[in-house]
Image (cartoon, rainbow, N blue to C red; front, side, top):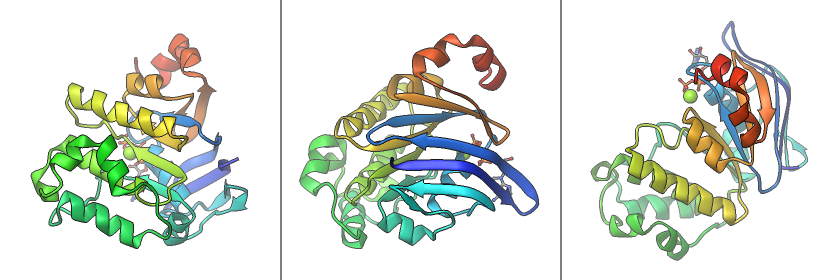
Length: 232
Ligand SMILES: Nc1ncnc2c1ncn2[C@@H]1O[C@H](COP(=O)(O)OP(=O)(O)OP(=O)(O)O)[C@@H](O)[C@H]1O
Ligand SMILES: [Mg+2]
């Protein structure tokens, strides 16, 4: 069982953000965490990677308790977070960004050859600096960087945010491809349609707690959950 959160409570100072949050991601599964602005989606990812350690509750990864474990250790254990801000090196080229991720990885993942085969746009842009590429290409580079490492849990925070519809389709295609390769994925989304098309299972979060768990088709049919928590 790759990832289990049980009764997680996370705070920023006195603000109680995650309230007894429980969720799980099974091996090879793509799970979407959906919810409106400010409900605790990013905080959930930050709690898992150890960026904001929970005050109580437990987080288990591949059978080991990783609650509050520091970020570097979690990264070495195979947990990768592609944050909303993407965080690529803008003064390095696409190829240099990938090579840097490779040399700093504890164990290798995909080869550059595999990456370029699956992300032809990155090959075309290999010699361009991080600040010379489009938003969609930055997102692809951020995902590719996680893949050259030995990532076994890939967490994506709103990977389609701010991208043009055509590029959204392209990023979705890449996520689908990574999923086909057997990766375990936790996907945070505000884009309901993107999440429904990619996920095996969905959670809806509101005010720091899980309000719904089910298959995409169950969520699609639950007009009450959709209108109450996702405003659709
Ligand atoms: N560093 C911080 N210090 C204090 N409060 C924070 C901090 N980061 C987030 N918050 C608050 O915690 C709550 C949850 O934030 P979080 O970023 O997890 O939401 P989110 O669901 O990811 O929202 P969005 O869709 O806008 O990305 C919000 O009320 C936010 O204002
Ligand atoms: Mg967020």
